[in-house]
Length: 464
Ligand code: BES
Ligand code: MN
Image (tube, rainbow, N blue to C red; front, side, top):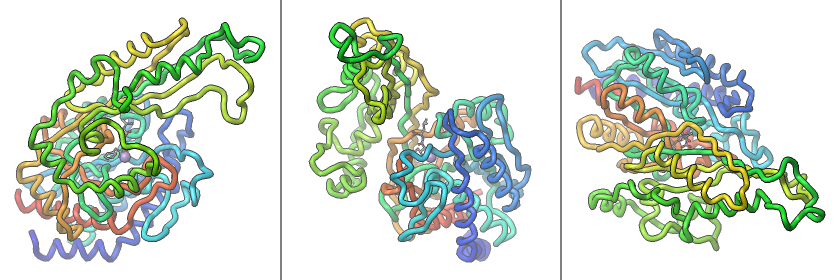
């Protein structure tokens, strides 16, 4: 389909892009932080706001799908194209906490446009993705009066906390969600303005670890010497997680890492790499080394495991008195890759931490819900359609990349739907600062992604 309906949909989008952007800003205003300890009411309000948008754009059967615990997902569909393929469109409405509020140039939940970017928590991850789906659907339905394919929309509310209830929800509503392919708007472009199709995700295994040596903190002068400091104990334990090149050093952890095929290696090496650009994108400071041993940064980010200590707590800067703390706490995450198993990785990590604990300190390790890695081939008509659509939407040749981040939904839904293909392309870019302060979205790229999805519907509708 290249004729009139498509151009009507594209025209409709160009006339209404500003309205969709306004809806995105209104979503960004809602602090829908899914982390435990944050107010639940804005998260529920955001689910409701998404449901209202789905109805406004004429989706049918709009429902807020709850589970017994956790935040709901929002569903809606338009299935008025019998005989044509059905796409399940996914994004998430929950966001990360704001981080250090004083580092935001404008407040995190007050959307603000500067130099072609929309700033605000969730602008890129992933409310921009939510609005990408809705803008594309609306452009077809309002512009052309119909869609060339059937669509089902699922907008999740706890992706940023590991989607712990999603599997149950997907199993419960398997029939409602049945589709020929899924389109996930929750990834990033390789570079600003470069359309990118993501063909792999790492998984993640996260734990919190607490080390305790005293029943309460004590004066470090009076008591220091014979007593084990839990902060030093934790520091020693954490230091054993990596080798001198920063690579995971937990015994057994690398055993299942799949070696790169020569095809994979060739494709990684074909990606343009400029150290200066990589340094700018990654925000690494000038004097700081790029670590991880030999290999391209892409191999290290996409196909090798990595470990990060997200937070450490023991007293605080403000209360840093001369004490031996009673306890120390950290949150540790391991990104996992083919063919690592989340539960096996968790076991190795737990056992290692306990084994490395010095001086008889008490160690408690608590796991969070893990996410599996995902990888796909990009051969076949559906991937060709996606690449063609991205090229048209951006006016530029797309690249196929991997990603270092995780999206639990992808593996789970493709398995439940019997191995259907997943198309991942999103609205982020390397400067989006997702999960950090001053998160932002390139408005022009977001518009190009919306247009790509408008084209994708046409490409897939044509094929039957
Ligand atoms: N959008 C990201 C995942 C992502 C990042 C995909 C970069 C592709 C490229 C997503 O919202 C996210 O941050 N996910 C969490 C998942 C975890 C809590 C299971 C992550 O990766 O930390
Ligand atoms: Mn996201």
